[in-house]
Image (cartoon, rainbow, N blue to C red):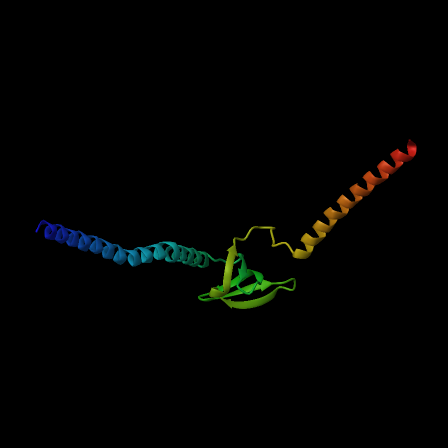
Length: 147
């Protein structure tokens, strides 16, 4: 009969182990949901709160970028609508506040640089480098002729 007692205790131990395993199986989805909330939802809420704060602090004279890619200066604000000036001819556009992608505070004398100006600066720099390279080649040629 002692063999029966041993098998009875083995069955009890197996049941206890499977009970612990099922508890772990129940905790896994809950743990997954908690991780999902922490990694996805909380940063999104923080970003949304920062965006609303940015729109709340919007004032006349601020430079903005719209979701469509337009850059302009705020000239009027009404509840949910803003009017901006953009382009060299100061075209006025009326937009919903939700169409703003980012706000840059107004700084006297600073404007968003044109890409054409940047290209000119880069081409000027490359021209200077080419000129220096040409001078070095000429100097080395004249040094060889002198020998």
